[in-house]
Image (tube, rainbow over all chains, first blue to last red):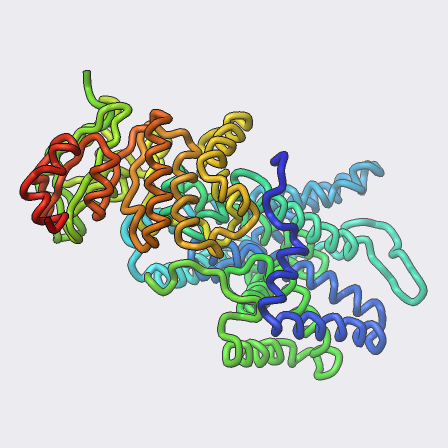
Amino acid sequence: MEATRVQPSFLERVMLNMRARPAAWIVIAMTLGFLVIIGIFAGPSQLINTIVTGGMWALMAVGLALVFGVMNIPHFAHGDSFMIGAYVAYFVFTPIQAYLRDNPNPFLSAVGPLIGWIAAALVGFVAGAVMEKLVFYPLRMRTRRGWVMNTFLLTVGISFVLVYGANLILGPNFRGVPNYWNVPPIVIGSVRLTMERIAAFVVAIVAIVAFWIFLSNTRTGRAIRAVAQDEMGAEMVGINLNFIYTLTFALATAMAALAGASLLFMFPAYPTVGLKPLYFAWYVVMLVGLGNVQGAIVGGFIVAVLQTLTQQFFGVSYEDVVPVVVMILVLLLVPNGIFGSEVKGIQEQ
Amino acid sequence: MAALLEVEHINAGYGFLQVLWDVSLKVEKGEFVCLLGANGAGKTTTLRTIAGFLKPTAGDIRFEGQSIAKTPAYQISQMGISFVSESLNLFTNMSVRENLLLGAYRVLDKKKQLQALDFVYSLFPRLKERERQLAGTMSGGERKMLAIARGMMSMPKLLLVDEPSLGLAPQVVVTVFEALQTLRKEGVTILLVEQNVPSTLRITDRGYVMEQGKIVLEGPSKELMNNEHVRVAYMGI
Protein backbone atom coordinates (compact mmCIF):
# COMPACT_ATOMS: atom_id res chain seq x y z
CA MET A 1 0.00 0.00 0.00
CA GLU A 2 1.23 3.50 -0.76
CA ALA A 3 2.18 5.79 2.04
CA THR A 4 0.30 8.60 0.38
CA ARG A 5 -3.20 8.54 -1.00
CA VAL A 6 -3.15 10.10 -4.40
CA GLN A 7 -6.57 9.08 -5.51
CA PRO A 8 -9.77 10.78 -4.42
CA SER A 9 -11.71 8.36 -2.23
CA PHE A 10 -14.43 6.20 -3.68
CA LEU A 11 -17.18 8.45 -2.31
CA GLU A 12 -15.49 11.58 -3.63
CA ARG A 13 -15.23 10.01 -7.04
CA VAL A 14 -18.84 8.90 -6.99
CA MET A 15 -19.91 12.41 -6.00
CA LEU A 16 -17.78 13.97 -8.75
CA ASN A 17 -19.21 11.55 -11.22
CA MET A 18 -22.71 12.41 -10.19
CA ARG A 19 -22.28 16.13 -10.26
CA ALA A 20 -21.33 15.75 -13.88
CA ARG A 21 -24.25 13.44 -14.60
CA PRO A 22 -27.66 14.35 -13.21
CA ALA A 23 -29.17 11.18 -14.71
CA ALA A 24 -27.07 9.19 -12.27
CA TRP A 25 -28.45 11.14 -9.32
CA ILE A 26 -32.01 10.52 -10.39
CA VAL A 27 -31.44 6.81 -10.90
CA ILE A 28 -29.68 6.36 -7.57
CA ALA A 29 -32.37 8.30 -5.73
CA MET A 30 -35.02 6.23 -7.46
CA THR A 31 -33.20 3.03 -6.55
CA LEU A 32 -33.03 3.99 -2.89
CA GLY A 33 -36.70 4.97 -3.00
CA PHE A 34 -37.60 1.65 -4.55
CA LEU A 35 -35.56 -0.15 -1.90
CA VAL A 36 -37.78 1.49 0.72
CA ILE A 37 -40.88 0.55 -1.26
CA ILE A 38 -39.67 -3.04 -1.47
CA GLY A 39 -39.00 -3.00 2.27
CA ILE A 40 -42.53 -1.77 3.02
CA PHE A 41 -44.64 -3.66 0.49
CA ALA A 42 -42.70 -6.83 -0.14
CA GLY A 43 -41.31 -7.28 3.32
CA PRO A 44 -37.84 -6.95 4.78
CA SER A 45 -36.76 -10.41 3.64
CA GLN A 46 -37.26 -9.33 0.02
CA LEU A 47 -35.18 -6.28 0.81
CA ILE A 48 -32.36 -8.49 2.07
CA ASN A 49 -32.70 -10.68 -1.01
CA THR A 50 -32.40 -7.65 -3.24
CA ILE A 51 -29.27 -6.48 -1.51
CA VAL A 52 -27.67 -9.92 -1.69
CA THR A 53 -28.37 -10.30 -5.41
CA GLY A 54 -27.27 -6.70 -5.93
CA GLY A 55 -23.90 -7.50 -4.42
CA MET A 56 -23.56 -10.51 -6.68
CA TRP A 57 -24.52 -8.70 -9.89
CA ALA A 58 -22.05 -6.03 -8.89
CA LEU A 59 -19.31 -8.64 -8.45
CA MET A 60 -20.09 -10.09 -11.88
CA ALA A 61 -20.42 -6.71 -13.55
CA VAL A 62 -17.15 -5.36 -12.16
CA GLY A 63 -15.26 -8.15 -13.94
CA LEU A 64 -17.17 -7.50 -17.13
CA ALA A 65 -16.56 -3.76 -16.97
CA LEU A 66 -12.89 -4.33 -16.29
CA VAL A 67 -12.36 -6.71 -19.18
CA PHE A 68 -14.15 -4.32 -21.50
CA GLY A 69 -12.39 -1.23 -20.19
CA VAL A 70 -8.86 -2.64 -20.17
CA MET A 71 -8.91 -5.10 -23.03
CA ASN A 72 -11.89 -3.95 -25.16
CA ILE A 73 -13.33 -7.44 -25.07
CA PRO A 74 -17.13 -7.78 -24.93
CA HIS A 75 -16.95 -10.83 -22.71
CA PHE A 76 -19.82 -13.21 -23.40
CA ALA A 77 -18.22 -16.15 -21.63
CA HIS A 78 -18.30 -14.38 -18.28
CA GLY A 79 -21.27 -16.48 -17.21
CA ASP A 80 -19.23 -19.61 -17.74
CA SER A 81 -16.68 -18.35 -15.24
CA PHE A 82 -19.64 -18.23 -12.85
CA MET A 83 -20.42 -21.84 -13.84
CA ILE A 84 -16.82 -22.93 -13.24
CA GLY A 85 -16.90 -21.36 -9.79
CA ALA A 86 -20.17 -23.10 -8.95
CA TYR A 87 -18.82 -26.52 -10.00
CA VAL A 88 -15.52 -26.07 -8.18
CA ALA A 89 -17.29 -25.03 -4.99
CA TYR A 90 -19.59 -28.05 -5.31
CA PHE A 91 -16.79 -30.55 -5.88
CA VAL A 92 -14.61 -29.13 -3.14
CA PHE A 93 -17.34 -28.64 -0.60
CA THR A 94 -19.31 -31.90 -0.91
CA PRO A 95 -16.37 -34.13 0.16
CA ILE A 96 -15.80 -31.82 3.11
CA GLN A 97 -19.49 -32.10 3.94
CA ALA A 98 -19.37 -35.91 3.68
CA TYR A 99 -16.30 -36.03 5.88
CA LEU A 100 -17.99 -33.81 8.45
CA ARG A 101 -20.98 -36.13 8.60
CA ASP A 102 -18.77 -38.86 10.03
CA ASN A 103 -16.35 -36.71 11.98
CA PRO A 104 -18.10 -33.66 13.38
CA ASN A 105 -15.68 -30.79 13.73
CA PRO A 106 -17.07 -27.35 14.51
CA PHE A 107 -14.09 -25.49 13.10
CA LEU A 108 -14.09 -27.30 9.77
CA SER A 109 -17.82 -26.95 9.40
CA ALA A 110 -17.45 -23.21 9.88
CA VAL A 111 -14.64 -22.74 7.37
CA GLY A 112 -15.51 -25.59 5.00
CA PRO A 113 -17.56 -23.43 2.63
CA LEU A 114 -14.85 -20.79 2.63
CA ILE A 115 -12.36 -23.42 1.44
CA GLY A 116 -14.71 -24.19 -1.43
CA TRP A 117 -15.04 -20.52 -2.30
CA ILE A 118 -11.34 -19.81 -2.18
CA ALA A 119 -10.71 -22.88 -4.35
CA ALA A 120 -13.30 -21.57 -6.81
CA ALA A 121 -11.65 -18.16 -6.96
CA LEU A 122 -8.21 -19.72 -7.46
CA VAL A 123 -9.39 -22.09 -10.18
CA GLY A 124 -11.20 -19.13 -11.77
CA PHE A 125 -7.99 -17.10 -11.71
CA VAL A 126 -5.99 -19.86 -13.38
CA ALA A 127 -8.77 -20.59 -15.89
CA GLY A 128 -8.92 -16.90 -16.79
CA ALA A 129 -5.17 -16.70 -17.28
CA VAL A 130 -5.17 -19.83 -19.45
CA MET A 131 -8.10 -18.52 -21.51
CA GLU A 132 -6.31 -15.25 -22.12
CA LYS A 133 -2.99 -16.85 -23.07
CA LEU A 134 -4.63 -19.49 -25.24
CA VAL A 135 -7.16 -17.39 -27.10
CA PHE A 136 -6.76 -13.63 -26.87
CA TYR A 137 -2.98 -13.41 -26.72
CA PRO A 138 -2.43 -15.17 -30.07
CA LEU A 139 -5.13 -13.02 -31.67
CA ARG A 140 -3.55 -9.86 -30.28
CA MET A 141 -0.17 -10.88 -31.69
CA ARG A 142 -1.71 -11.45 -35.10
CA THR A 143 -3.80 -8.34 -35.52
CA ARG A 144 -5.75 -5.74 -33.63
CA ARG A 145 -7.97 -5.09 -36.61
CA GLY A 146 -11.65 -5.75 -35.95
CA TRP A 147 -10.66 -6.56 -32.39
CA VAL A 148 -14.00 -5.97 -30.69
CA MET A 149 -15.97 -8.06 -33.16
CA ASN A 150 -13.39 -10.85 -33.28
CA THR A 151 -13.08 -11.13 -29.52
CA PHE A 152 -16.86 -11.03 -29.17
CA LEU A 153 -17.12 -14.05 -31.46
CA LEU A 154 -14.28 -15.76 -29.63
CA THR A 155 -15.93 -15.33 -26.23
CA VAL A 156 -19.15 -16.79 -27.62
CA GLY A 157 -17.09 -19.71 -28.92
CA ILE A 158 -15.41 -20.16 -25.54
CA SER A 159 -18.83 -20.14 -23.94
CA PHE A 160 -20.05 -22.94 -26.24
CA VAL A 161 -16.97 -25.03 -25.55
CA LEU A 162 -17.28 -24.61 -21.80
CA VAL A 163 -21.03 -25.22 -21.64
CA TYR A 164 -20.96 -28.33 -23.82
CA GLY A 165 -17.71 -29.47 -22.25
CA ALA A 166 -19.40 -29.37 -18.86
CA ASN A 167 -22.43 -31.12 -20.31
CA LEU A 168 -20.24 -33.85 -21.81
CA ILE A 169 -18.13 -34.50 -18.74
CA LEU A 170 -20.48 -33.74 -15.89
CA GLY A 171 -23.86 -34.21 -17.50
CA PRO A 172 -26.86 -31.92 -17.38
CA ASN A 173 -27.69 -32.71 -13.73
CA PHE A 174 -28.17 -30.03 -11.15
CA ARG A 175 -25.56 -30.18 -8.40
CA GLY A 176 -26.43 -27.94 -5.54
CA VAL A 177 -25.67 -27.38 -1.92
CA PRO A 178 -28.94 -26.27 -0.28
CA ASN A 179 -27.13 -24.98 2.73
CA TYR A 180 -23.48 -24.41 3.39
CA TRP A 181 -23.86 -24.18 7.13
CA ASN A 182 -26.09 -26.27 9.37
CA VAL A 183 -27.11 -23.35 11.53
CA PRO A 184 -30.63 -22.08 12.07
CA PRO A 185 -31.36 -18.75 10.39
CA ILE A 186 -31.08 -15.60 12.43
CA VAL A 187 -34.54 -14.21 13.07
CA ILE A 188 -35.01 -10.49 13.64
CA GLY A 189 -38.70 -9.68 13.91
CA SER A 190 -40.29 -11.07 10.78
CA VAL A 191 -37.00 -11.37 8.92
CA ARG A 192 -35.28 -14.69 8.52
CA LEU A 193 -31.64 -14.34 7.61
CA THR A 194 -29.87 -17.50 6.58
CA MET A 195 -26.16 -17.75 7.11
CA GLU A 196 -25.66 -18.33 3.36
CA ARG A 197 -27.26 -15.02 2.46
CA ILE A 198 -25.24 -13.08 4.98
CA ALA A 199 -22.04 -14.78 3.84
CA ALA A 200 -22.80 -14.22 0.14
CA PHE A 201 -23.36 -10.55 0.79
CA VAL A 202 -20.22 -10.21 2.91
CA VAL A 203 -18.15 -11.99 0.25
CA ALA A 204 -19.42 -9.68 -2.47
CA ILE A 205 -18.73 -6.55 -0.44
CA VAL A 206 -15.30 -7.71 0.76
CA ALA A 207 -14.26 -8.77 -2.75
CA ILE A 208 -15.42 -5.49 -4.28
CA VAL A 209 -13.81 -3.32 -1.61
CA ALA A 210 -10.55 -5.29 -1.73
CA PHE A 211 -10.54 -5.02 -5.49
CA TRP A 212 -11.21 -1.31 -5.31
CA ILE A 213 -8.32 -0.74 -2.93
CA PHE A 214 -6.13 -2.84 -5.19
CA LEU A 215 -7.04 -0.76 -8.24
CA SER A 216 -6.67 2.64 -6.65
CA ASN A 217 -3.76 2.22 -4.27
CA THR A 218 -1.32 -0.37 -5.51
CA ARG A 219 1.33 -0.18 -8.16
CA THR A 220 -0.13 -3.03 -10.20
CA GLY A 221 -3.68 -1.74 -9.81
CA ARG A 222 -2.56 1.64 -11.04
CA ALA A 223 -0.89 -0.04 -14.00
CA ILE A 224 -4.18 -1.76 -14.87
CA ARG A 225 -5.95 1.59 -14.89
CA ALA A 226 -3.12 3.08 -16.91
CA VAL A 227 -3.51 0.42 -19.60
CA ALA A 228 -7.25 1.10 -19.66
CA GLN A 229 -6.60 4.79 -20.28
CA ASP A 230 -3.65 4.83 -22.66
CA GLU A 231 -1.91 1.71 -23.88
CA MET A 232 0.96 3.49 -25.54
CA GLY A 233 1.50 5.66 -22.48
CA ALA A 234 1.56 2.52 -20.37
CA GLU A 235 4.20 0.96 -22.56
CA MET A 236 6.19 4.19 -22.47
CA VAL A 237 6.53 3.97 -18.70
CA GLY A 238 7.61 0.34 -18.91
CA ILE A 239 4.39 -1.56 -18.25
CA ASN A 240 4.28 -4.99 -19.88
CA LEU A 241 0.89 -4.92 -21.57
CA ASN A 242 0.64 -8.67 -21.97
CA PHE A 243 1.13 -9.21 -18.26
CA ILE A 244 -1.55 -6.66 -17.40
CA TYR A 245 -3.99 -8.19 -19.90
CA THR A 246 -3.55 -11.67 -18.51
CA LEU A 247 -3.82 -10.45 -14.94
CA THR A 248 -6.98 -8.45 -15.71
CA PHE A 249 -8.68 -11.36 -17.38
CA ALA A 250 -7.67 -13.73 -14.59
CA LEU A 251 -8.98 -11.35 -11.91
CA ALA A 252 -12.30 -10.87 -13.69
CA THR A 253 -12.72 -14.61 -14.06
CA ALA A 254 -11.81 -15.17 -10.42
CA MET A 255 -14.48 -12.70 -9.30
CA ALA A 256 -17.15 -14.36 -11.43
CA ALA A 257 -16.10 -17.76 -10.12
CA LEU A 258 -16.33 -16.46 -6.57
CA ALA A 259 -19.84 -15.21 -7.29
CA GLY A 260 -20.79 -18.63 -8.68
CA ALA A 261 -19.36 -20.38 -5.63
CA SER A 262 -21.02 -18.22 -3.03
CA LEU A 263 -24.39 -18.36 -4.78
CA LEU A 264 -24.34 -22.17 -5.09
CA PHE A 265 -27.19 -22.37 -2.55
CA MET A 266 -29.38 -20.26 -4.87
CA PHE A 267 -28.12 -21.46 -8.25
CA PRO A 268 -27.15 -25.14 -8.26
CA ALA A 269 -24.34 -25.92 -10.69
CA TYR A 270 -25.35 -27.11 -14.16
CA PRO A 271 -23.86 -26.37 -17.59
CA THR A 272 -25.87 -23.28 -18.45
CA VAL A 273 -26.16 -21.85 -14.95
CA GLY A 274 -24.05 -18.87 -16.03
CA LEU A 275 -26.53 -17.51 -18.57
CA LYS A 276 -28.69 -15.58 -16.15
CA PRO A 277 -25.78 -13.97 -14.28
CA LEU A 278 -24.21 -13.17 -17.65
CA TYR A 279 -27.32 -11.39 -18.88
CA PHE A 280 -27.74 -9.48 -15.66
CA ALA A 281 -24.10 -8.44 -15.60
CA TRP A 282 -24.54 -7.15 -19.15
CA TYR A 283 -27.69 -5.25 -18.16
CA VAL A 284 -25.60 -3.64 -15.43
CA VAL A 285 -22.69 -2.57 -17.62
CA MET A 286 -24.93 -1.31 -20.41
CA LEU A 287 -27.01 0.60 -17.91
CA VAL A 288 -24.08 2.34 -16.21
CA GLY A 289 -21.81 2.69 -19.23
CA LEU A 290 -19.40 0.20 -20.77
CA GLY A 291 -16.07 -0.16 -19.03
CA ASN A 292 -17.07 1.92 -16.02
CA VAL A 293 -15.93 -0.07 -12.98
CA GLN A 294 -17.25 2.24 -10.26
CA GLY A 295 -20.55 2.50 -12.07
CA ALA A 296 -20.79 -1.30 -12.25
CA ILE A 297 -20.72 -1.52 -8.45
CA VAL A 298 -23.68 0.81 -8.05
CA GLY A 299 -25.34 -0.64 -11.12
CA GLY A 300 -25.43 -4.13 -9.65
CA PHE A 301 -27.76 -2.90 -6.94
CA ILE A 302 -29.87 -0.87 -9.36
CA VAL A 303 -30.51 -3.93 -11.50
CA ALA A 304 -31.27 -6.07 -8.45
CA VAL A 305 -33.87 -3.54 -7.35
CA LEU A 306 -35.41 -3.53 -10.81
CA GLN A 307 -35.51 -7.30 -10.72
CA THR A 308 -37.24 -7.48 -7.35
CA LEU A 309 -39.75 -4.81 -8.31
CA THR A 310 -40.57 -6.72 -11.46
CA GLN A 311 -41.02 -9.98 -9.59
CA GLN A 312 -43.18 -8.25 -7.02
CA PHE A 313 -45.45 -6.23 -9.26
CA PHE A 314 -45.43 -7.96 -12.66
CA GLY A 315 -44.57 -11.56 -11.85
CA VAL A 316 -41.41 -13.62 -12.18
CA SER A 317 -41.92 -14.26 -15.89
CA TYR A 318 -41.31 -10.57 -16.58
CA GLU A 319 -37.94 -10.64 -14.83
CA ASP A 320 -36.01 -10.33 -18.09
CA VAL A 321 -38.47 -8.05 -19.84
CA VAL A 322 -38.21 -5.05 -17.58
CA PRO A 323 -34.39 -4.83 -17.50
CA VAL A 324 -34.31 -5.15 -21.29
CA VAL A 325 -36.89 -2.38 -21.65
CA VAL A 326 -34.87 -0.21 -19.32
CA MET A 327 -31.73 -1.03 -21.27
CA ILE A 328 -33.37 -0.02 -24.55
CA LEU A 329 -34.51 3.24 -22.98
CA VAL A 330 -31.00 3.88 -21.66
CA LEU A 331 -29.47 3.23 -25.06
CA LEU A 332 -32.00 5.57 -26.65
CA LEU A 333 -31.76 8.38 -24.14
CA VAL A 334 -28.24 8.16 -22.64
CA PRO A 335 -26.25 5.95 -25.03
CA ASN A 336 -23.10 6.22 -22.94
CA GLY A 337 -24.88 4.82 -19.91
CA ILE A 338 -26.00 6.75 -16.87
CA PHE A 339 -22.52 7.00 -15.37
CA GLY A 340 -20.76 7.44 -18.69
CA SER A 341 -18.60 5.08 -20.64
CA GLU A 342 -14.89 4.90 -19.96
CA VAL A 343 -13.57 3.08 -22.94
CA LYS A 344 -10.49 4.02 -24.88
CA GLY A 345 -9.86 3.51 -28.49
CA ILE A 346 -13.01 1.67 -29.43
CA GLN A 347 -13.71 4.17 -32.19
CA GLU A 348 -10.28 4.00 -33.72
CA GLN A 349 -10.19 0.24 -33.98
CA MET B 1 34.28 4.33 -26.80
CA ALA B 2 30.83 3.60 -28.13
CA ALA B 3 28.23 6.33 -27.95
CA LEU B 4 25.20 6.03 -25.64
CA LEU B 5 22.84 5.63 -28.57
CA GLU B 6 23.89 4.50 -32.01
CA VAL B 7 21.38 4.30 -34.82
CA GLU B 8 22.96 2.60 -37.80
CA HIS B 9 21.53 2.61 -41.29
CA ILE B 10 17.93 1.91 -40.31
CA ASN B 11 14.98 1.64 -42.65
CA ALA B 12 11.53 1.79 -41.11
CA GLY B 13 7.95 2.60 -41.99
CA TYR B 14 4.32 1.70 -41.67
CA GLY B 15 3.19 -1.33 -43.64
CA PHE B 16 4.18 -0.86 -47.28
CA LEU B 17 5.04 2.77 -46.75
CA GLN B 18 8.73 3.15 -46.03
CA VAL B 19 9.47 6.39 -44.20
CA LEU B 20 13.07 6.14 -43.06
CA TRP B 21 15.83 5.49 -45.57
CA ASP B 22 19.23 4.57 -44.22
CA VAL B 23 19.10 6.82 -41.18
CA SER B 24 22.16 6.91 -38.94
CA LEU B 25 22.73 9.05 -35.89
CA LYS B 26 24.64 9.04 -32.66
CA VAL B 27 24.06 10.53 -29.23
CA GLU B 28 26.97 10.71 -26.79
CA LYS B 29 26.45 10.58 -23.05
CA GLY B 30 25.58 14.02 -21.67
CA GLU B 31 24.88 15.50 -25.10
CA PHE B 32 21.85 17.55 -26.07
CA VAL B 33 21.13 16.60 -29.67
CA CYS B 34 18.33 17.79 -31.90
CA LEU B 35 16.70 16.30 -34.96
CA LEU B 36 15.27 18.97 -37.21
CA GLY B 37 13.13 18.87 -40.28
CA ALA B 38 9.86 19.81 -41.89
CA ASN B 39 6.55 18.03 -41.47
CA GLY B 40 6.65 14.48 -42.75
CA ALA B 41 10.44 14.30 -42.86
CA GLY B 42 10.46 11.24 -40.61
CA LYS B 43 11.58 12.77 -37.32
CA THR B 44 8.77 11.30 -35.26
CA THR B 45 9.16 7.95 -37.01
CA THR B 46 12.83 7.94 -36.04
CA LEU B 47 11.98 8.52 -32.38
CA ARG B 48 9.23 5.92 -32.41
CA THR B 49 11.66 3.42 -33.89
CA ILE B 50 14.28 4.14 -31.24
CA ALA B 51 11.64 3.84 -28.50
CA GLY B 52 10.60 0.46 -29.89
CA PHE B 53 7.09 1.30 -31.07
CA LEU B 54 8.17 0.60 -34.63
CA LYS B 55 10.62 -2.08 -35.65
CA PRO B 56 13.32 -1.21 -38.19
CA THR B 57 13.24 -3.35 -41.33
CA ALA B 58 16.98 -2.95 -41.79
CA GLY B 59 19.93 -1.64 -39.80
CA ASP B 60 20.56 -1.73 -36.08
CA ILE B 61 19.96 0.42 -33.01
CA ARG B 62 22.35 0.07 -30.11
CA PHE B 63 21.92 1.49 -26.65
CA GLU B 64 24.98 1.26 -24.42
CA GLY B 65 26.43 -1.12 -26.97
CA GLN B 66 23.47 -3.49 -26.81
CA SER B 67 21.16 -3.99 -29.77
CA ILE B 68 17.60 -2.86 -29.05
CA ALA B 69 16.24 -3.12 -32.59
CA LYS B 70 14.05 -6.09 -31.68
CA THR B 71 13.36 -5.27 -28.03
CA PRO B 72 9.72 -4.53 -27.07
CA ALA B 73 8.95 -0.93 -26.16
CA TYR B 74 8.30 -1.58 -22.49
CA GLN B 75 11.70 -3.23 -22.08
CA ILE B 76 13.44 -0.36 -23.85
CA SER B 77 11.77 1.94 -21.35
CA GLN B 78 13.07 -0.26 -18.54
CA MET B 79 16.59 -0.10 -19.98
CA GLY B 80 16.63 3.66 -19.48
CA ILE B 81 15.18 5.35 -22.54
CA SER B 82 12.20 7.58 -21.79
CA PHE B 83 10.04 8.64 -24.69
CA VAL B 84 7.91 11.77 -24.48
CA SER B 85 5.62 11.50 -27.48
CA GLU B 86 4.01 14.25 -29.46
CA SER B 87 0.52 13.29 -28.26
CA LEU B 88 1.95 12.93 -24.72
CA ASN B 89 -0.04 9.75 -23.94
CA LEU B 90 -0.87 10.91 -20.45
CA PHE B 91 -3.31 9.04 -18.23
CA THR B 92 -5.94 11.73 -18.44
CA ASN B 93 -8.30 10.32 -15.82
CA MET B 94 -5.59 10.13 -13.17
CA SER B 95 -4.14 12.81 -10.97
CA VAL B 96 -0.85 14.49 -11.76
CA ARG B 97 0.79 12.63 -8.92
CA GLU B 98 -0.48 9.27 -10.11
CA ASN B 99 0.82 9.98 -13.59
CA LEU B 100 4.21 10.75 -12.11
CA LEU B 101 4.23 7.66 -9.92
CA LEU B 102 3.42 5.59 -13.00
CA GLY B 103 6.41 7.21 -14.65
CA ALA B 104 8.43 5.54 -11.90
CA TYR B 105 6.62 2.23 -12.45
CA ARG B 106 9.91 0.37 -12.80
CA VAL B 107 11.49 2.07 -9.78
CA LEU B 108 10.66 -0.32 -6.99
CA ASP B 109 12.51 1.54 -4.26
CA LYS B 110 9.98 3.84 -2.55
CA LYS B 111 12.72 6.20 -1.42
CA LYS B 112 14.07 6.64 -4.94
CA GLN B 113 10.51 7.20 -6.18
CA LEU B 114 10.00 10.05 -3.74
CA GLN B 115 13.41 11.51 -4.62
CA ALA B 116 12.46 11.51 -8.29
CA LEU B 117 9.15 13.12 -7.38
CA ASP B 118 10.96 15.88 -5.49
CA PHE B 119 13.31 16.37 -8.41
CA VAL B 120 10.57 16.83 -11.01
CA TYR B 121 8.58 19.05 -8.67
CA SER B 122 11.64 21.28 -8.27
CA LEU B 123 11.89 21.42 -12.07
CA PHE B 124 8.21 22.16 -12.54
CA PRO B 125 6.81 23.77 -9.38
CA ARG B 126 3.52 24.17 -11.23
CA LEU B 127 3.00 20.41 -11.17
CA LYS B 128 3.34 20.35 -7.40
CA GLU B 129 0.53 22.92 -7.15
CA ARG B 130 -1.62 20.75 -9.41
CA GLU B 131 -0.68 17.48 -7.73
CA ARG B 132 -4.25 16.29 -7.20
CA GLN B 133 -5.75 17.61 -10.38
CA LEU B 134 -6.69 15.18 -13.13
CA ALA B 135 -4.16 15.27 -15.95
CA GLY B 136 -6.87 15.66 -18.58
CA THR B 137 -8.11 18.91 -17.06
CA MET B 138 -4.81 20.78 -17.31
CA SER B 139 -3.72 23.30 -19.93
CA GLY B 140 -1.60 22.30 -22.92
CA GLY B 141 1.63 23.66 -21.46
CA GLU B 142 1.07 21.98 -18.11
CA ARG B 143 0.40 18.71 -19.88
CA LYS B 144 3.69 18.97 -21.80
CA MET B 145 5.47 19.60 -18.53
CA LEU B 146 3.72 16.64 -16.95
CA ALA B 147 4.71 14.40 -19.86
CA ILE B 148 8.36 15.46 -19.62
CA ALA B 149 8.25 15.08 -15.84
CA ARG B 150 6.71 11.62 -16.16
CA GLY B 151 9.49 10.70 -18.55
CA MET B 152 12.04 11.89 -15.99
CA MET B 153 10.55 9.91 -13.10
CA SER B 154 12.41 6.75 -14.05
CA MET B 155 15.70 8.71 -14.04
CA PRO B 156 16.39 7.67 -17.64
CA LYS B 157 19.81 7.62 -19.27
CA LEU B 158 18.32 9.06 -22.43
CA LEU B 159 15.27 11.25 -22.88
CA LEU B 160 13.57 11.34 -26.28
CA VAL B 161 11.32 14.38 -26.66
CA ASP B 162 9.03 14.77 -29.64
CA GLU B 163 8.04 18.32 -30.64
CA PRO B 164 7.44 19.85 -27.21
CA SER B 165 6.68 23.23 -28.75
CA LEU B 166 3.81 21.94 -30.87
CA GLY B 167 0.55 23.74 -30.20
CA LEU B 168 1.89 25.89 -27.38
CA ALA B 169 1.78 29.64 -26.93
CA PRO B 170 5.23 31.23 -27.49
CA GLN B 171 5.52 32.13 -23.81
CA VAL B 172 4.88 28.52 -22.78
CA VAL B 173 7.37 27.25 -25.37
CA VAL B 174 10.03 29.30 -23.59
CA THR B 175 9.16 27.64 -20.28
CA VAL B 176 9.37 24.16 -21.79
CA PHE B 177 12.69 24.92 -23.47
CA GLU B 178 14.07 26.33 -20.24
CA ALA B 179 13.06 23.13 -18.49
CA LEU B 180 14.92 21.09 -21.11
CA GLN B 181 17.99 23.26 -20.60
CA THR B 182 17.80 22.69 -16.86
CA LEU B 183 17.61 18.94 -17.45
CA ARG B 184 20.64 19.17 -19.66
CA LYS B 185 22.55 21.00 -16.93
CA GLU B 186 21.56 18.18 -14.58
CA GLY B 187 23.44 15.86 -16.92
CA VAL B 188 20.51 14.27 -18.71
CA THR B 189 21.17 13.16 -22.26
CA ILE B 190 18.42 14.42 -24.56
CA LEU B 191 17.44 13.76 -28.15
CA LEU B 192 14.98 16.46 -29.14
CA VAL B 193 12.82 16.51 -32.24
CA GLU B 194 11.69 19.99 -33.27
CA GLN B 195 10.36 22.13 -36.07
CA ASN B 196 11.14 25.33 -34.27
CA VAL B 197 14.64 25.52 -35.74
CA PRO B 198 16.16 28.79 -34.43
CA SER B 199 15.30 28.32 -30.76
CA THR B 200 16.25 24.66 -30.86
CA LEU B 201 19.67 25.33 -32.34
CA ARG B 202 20.26 27.94 -29.67
CA ILE B 203 19.96 25.45 -26.80
CA THR B 204 21.37 22.23 -28.29
CA ASP B 205 24.95 21.01 -28.79
CA ARG B 206 24.59 19.19 -32.03
CA GLY B 207 21.95 18.69 -34.67
CA TYR B 208 20.78 16.52 -37.50
CA VAL B 209 18.59 17.75 -40.32
CA MET B 210 16.15 15.33 -41.92
CA GLU B 211 14.49 15.63 -45.28
CA GLN B 212 12.24 13.04 -46.88
CA GLY B 213 13.29 10.26 -44.55
CA LYS B 214 17.02 10.84 -44.89
CA ILE B 215 19.58 12.68 -42.82
CA VAL B 216 20.88 15.43 -45.07
CA LEU B 217 23.01 17.49 -42.71
CA GLU B 218 24.66 17.11 -39.37
CA GLY B 219 27.01 19.12 -37.22
CA PRO B 220 27.39 21.28 -34.14
CA SER B 221 24.37 23.53 -33.62
CA LYS B 222 26.46 26.67 -34.05
CA GLU B 223 27.60 25.57 -37.49
CA LEU B 224 24.13 24.55 -38.51
CA MET B 225 22.88 27.97 -37.49
CA ASN B 226 25.23 29.53 -40.03
CA ASN B 227 24.67 26.91 -42.69
CA GLU B 228 23.31 28.43 -45.86
CA HIS B 229 20.80 25.60 -46.51
CA VAL B 230 19.44 25.64 -42.96
CA ARG B 231 19.10 29.42 -43.01
CA VAL B 232 17.21 29.43 -46.28
CA ALA B 233 15.02 26.38 -45.74
CA TYR B 234 14.21 26.60 -42.03
CA MET B 235 14.82 30.11 -40.80
CA GLY B 236 13.57 32.06 -43.76
CA ILE B 237 16.66 34.24 -43.87
